[in-house]
Structure formats: C-alpha cells, structure tokens
Amino acid sequence: MLDHLGLPVSDYEHSKAFYLQALAPLGAGLVLEVGADLTGDRSHAGFGRDGKPSLWIGEAPARARMHVALVADDRAAVDAFHRAALAAGGTDNGGPGLRPHYHPHYYAAFVLDPDGHNIEAVCHRPA
Image (cartoon, rainbow, N blue to C red; front, side, top):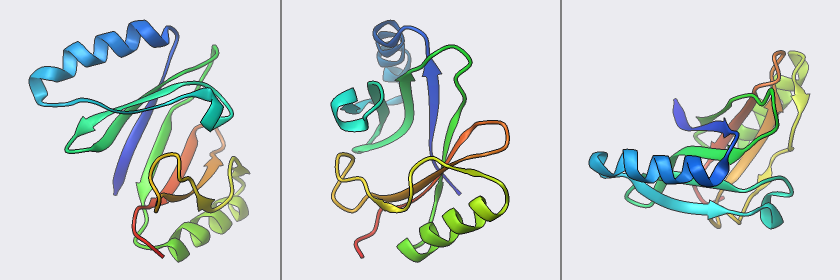
C-alpha cells in the first residue's frame, strides 16, 4: 500500500547528512535529489535502495505536515483517488498528471487531508 513517506525537516543539509550516515548500514543511500526549480517549492532528497526512493526529506516551514504516497495500480486509479478524496472533503494539492522530474512514467495526484497532511496516489507504470 505504501510507496514512500516524506518528512519535513528544519535544516535540510544537516538532515540530509544525518540520513546519509544513518541509512548506510541498511544498504540505503541518496537515490534522487530534486531542487526547488523542479518542485516549485523546496529541495527534497529521496533515500532508498536499488534506485527507488522510499524515504523523502524536504525543507519545510514551521508546522509542516507529513507526506504519504500510496501505490495505485494504474493511472485510472490515481484519477479516481483524486476525485474521491476531493468529494470526501480533501483539498486539491496537485491534480492527476505526469511528474517527469521523478521519472518518465511517474503519474500522481495530491490532496491535503482534513489535518493538512499531503496524501498522494502514484502509479509508476507506463500508460
């Protein structure tokens, strides 16, 4: 069910150094780093194994919320998740679409839940 988690951090460089060192014994390292120029927001670092980032950290303002990405079997499920979450009272935080700065087939949608947590549904498969 879970694809990846995102944690807000107060000191991006310090936290990145921490996770690089702490995750090394688990065979995990920095897989992908995405800057604010691509996210329209802040810098983010994805840690994982075998080329798959599973734990993300990102620069965050005070009172930042968690990010949870859920696996969707296909793009239609991403679209349906987005519609259902909005109908349930969620707030749009990025409609369904490709996010090629992660990889060419990264198709996702984002909503904020009632507590402001960023909930994502993602499909990694080609159309």
